[in-house]
Image (cartoon, rainbow, N blue to C red; front, side):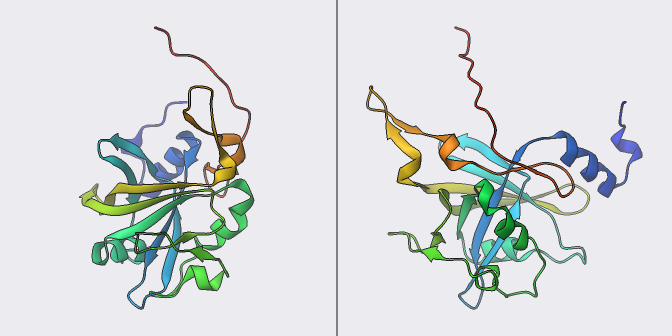
Length: 204
């Protein structure tokens, strides 16, 4: 089957892309609302794009009614935010934070999620996440026909749970993906749990 995108509507294109670009990592983004509490939402158009400086990219669409999402508005107004990598056992909480709440209401409070302060950084992190990126807004760009926004997130610090790390015989830190059990995104309402690790050394 060949799918011609110029024959599809925007929702149909989204439907096909999210079922073929798989699995996708999920950015679980914590931002500060105007009132001082926290917004939390997942985004799966997300990946790493640069190492100097360390940078992540997240694509954020609009609400169904055309308004900007709280995540984007908060980051425009307050440049610091935290991107988390959710573990498989956090799917129920992550899924609940995808619900659309009235502007300014906190998904953190609504779902009784706990946060932990980060020394030297304005924002806290989610206590139960094994990986968190403390970020500052680098840039926001608008693309596409429906005002999709690209958020360029400069990483200032990475938190990794100590239980997910070790030091090898060469003194290098090893981060164990199988101890993080990262949650992945598929199409529609589907997610994928962490599976078998396959190894293949790059040819010389």
